[in-house]
Length: 306
Length: 133
Image 1: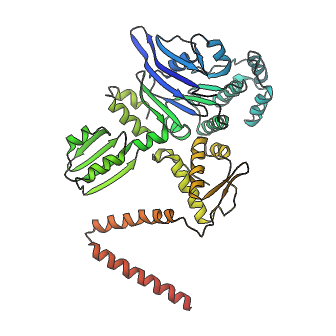
Image 2 (image 1 turned 30 degrees about the horizontal axis):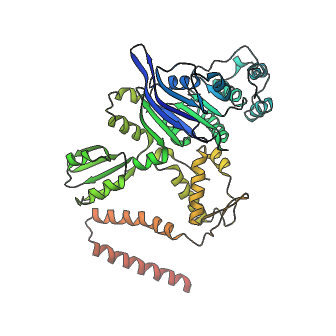
Image 3 (image 1 turned 90 degrees about the vertical axis):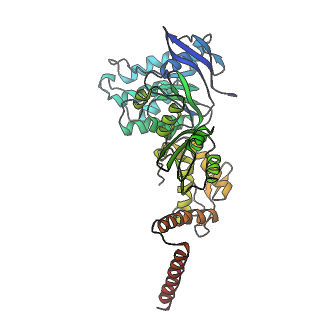
């Protein structure tokens, strides 16, 4: 489709007096594996529910596949796959029956696709769901949702509590699924290592607000750690717009940039520092830096992420 | 054959470019080898297909790979023809290390140059003797 698959503008959700989502804006293009990140309680699940039209926003607007999330929720639910936080399945059914019942709700259901995926993961159709491992149940959930042939998948912690191998298999399937360029996934997670690897775009949210969003490579290029020693004007450096954070120990200065690190390097050179190095930052470091910059008051909550 | 380390902070497409170049220059990927499709490599490495596509595009622009429309992506460079930028890049980090160490040991630039010249001379003598044998 032309234009973004998901467009969210100033979306808010108030539960009583406390905002769960606070003026959130984001865009998900086609062919993207979009990582929606944040600590527990950041507003990720609420956001997904609003996109599906399962829960009503207090204010703001969400557009999914060109449709209004509030008024066209039914049409959206037909074309969008959703893996909720609570992944309980009908445990007394056998796999084959479960897929048959599930598929009967959806006009675009592909039984061929479902059996292909069962074969791919060597899940026997005659097995009772209760006897499946947690990882296999997660895979079955994914098989059911993808066999509906949705255009967009919203996945809330699809790999939560899985072992390394299962995580790899699930992520690998999602990557294959988006790789023809016209489908997207919004992956909601607090696993930074996963996101860092498979996502091309991200939005970091904290306390219902966007802390950082955009193309992951561009974000990586903007956030760098520069270390230098010499006589450097730390107070002035802190005021530079490209600098997120600067600390000094003796004559040793560490600077974390949030844009144009090369400009910061250029300006620093004018002070002829003795030693001078630039380092990449991983997503965990970028996250902490971005939250700090936002005036992070929730350091303890952030730690649940890392 | 490629190993991606997301936690290093280095953009993944840069890591992939570096490793493909390394495999090409080392001869592990000989000229004419067909590269896996974007889709395949992304699924194998469990990384985003856009990351792989970006690496392939950059490598095609540099002339390391060749994207034949509809047929696939192939290695274009023979291992002997090291890419100039790659030669310089590989040497640079070693040179940086050498200079840092020298400064740390308070060896003057002049001393360093002398030592380097000595070493170069010794190396060429050694290879000369080898050829004689």
